[in-house]
Every structure is written in C-alpha cells, then in structure tokens.
View 1 (cartoon, rainbow, N blue to C red):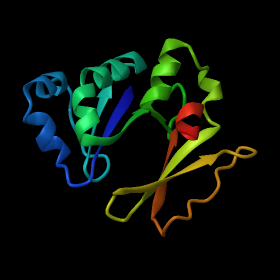
View 2 (cartoon, rainbow, N blue to C red):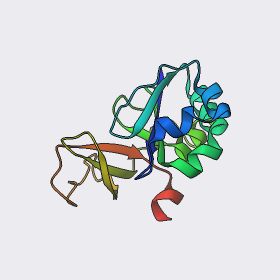
View 3 (tube, helix red, strand yellow):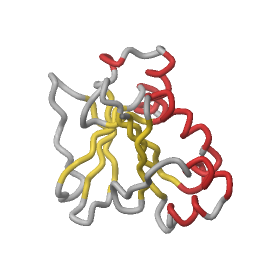
View 4 (cartoon, rainbow, N blue to C red):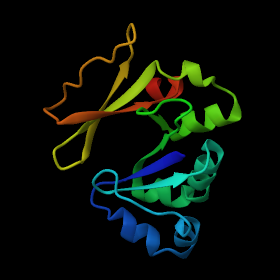
Length: 151
C-alpha cells in the first residue's frame, strides 16, 4: 500500500478545512484518514498512481491549506517519503526509483509528533548528514527532485 500524508500549514486545522468542503470531502470519503504527524492527514492508497491521482484531485486545497504533500511508496523505500513532484516523476517513468535517494528534505520530528524546519541535504556515501537546526526526537526523510532541491 502507498501512503499519502498531507502536512497542514501553521494555524490551519487541516482536517476541518478539508472535510468542510464538499469536493475535498468526496475525494477523501473512501479513505481511512489518520493523523500521522501533528496537523497532518494520512491515507493509504492502492498504488503510486492512485496516490498521485488523489493529490491531483485535492490540488486546490493543497495549495491553500498545506505546507507539504508526501507519498510513501514501498517499492521505492519503506521509510523515506517522496515529495509530490518526485512521486509523480517516478509514476510517469521520468525518474528511475533507484535514482531517487540523493536529494533530501529532512524534517525534524518533535516529542509532540510535529514536523519542524526542514533541512535540504544530499546523501553522501549512503549516509544522511545530521539534522542540526534544533534538538528533535527523530527526523523524517523526504526524497525530492533535483529542481525542488535547488529551488
């Protein structure tokens, strides 16, 4: 199963915003929504293609109410998320899944399960440099496209 995680913008109750709007509510109606991280919504889909399609269906809301949209695709990685752009590129065959691990956006994860201040890093010799923006309990690694990394 492929997982989608929508990370809400600060000062936005993401769940309330999405379920209060008919089109978003209908797009999410068949999914079991969970809060993976503080102020986030996650759902399991059947494939990478259906995850990208869901994000496309919700695009109007994502632009307004989210800071990030992440996809966890087990055929690429069991524990590193893909950015929306990278997930779409992998789905379309524009980027080989084996070539997705160099450019990273690493979030700090607090005790309260909140994603904080992402750092952009490159994997070196298979290792991810340490997150050093603040003390955190853990990190969440998101693979991104080269253009997202440089942009």
